[in-house]
Length: 162
Image (cartoon, rainbow, N blue to C red; front, side, top):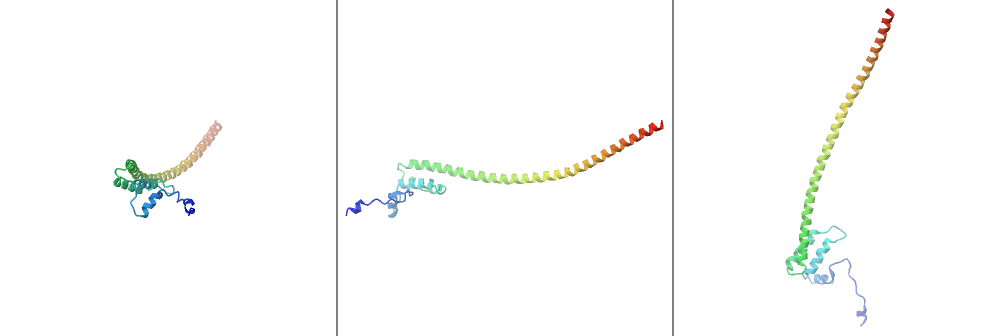
């Protein structure tokens, strides 16, 4: 008979934040208390395994404020709701800004590609022109050398004639 009282307590899952009171109220389909709603909302925000569920937390906090307007947790819940609203607004603005930035990035990538193509065309055009000018320069050097040779020959003839 004393063995039942001397048995050690069975620990529930330590990661479950709802507690024994929350479990017993759920078993009898009783609405959660203000504390349970607040703790559940906090759990939605502090889930280590995945991203915080802001909408679920917001829903639970709104339920707390509407069902328990005189609770000592209502002020904290309202403050959290304002913060969650700001987070939601910032996330929306961030998504818009990200889309805008992605659009600009695509536009700039196309512009860079177009400029590279244009630079290659110009480089090709000028490289052909440079080759022509180099050939012309070589021809002019040859012509100048021929003129010098002719001038030297002319001077030799003049000396021979005198």
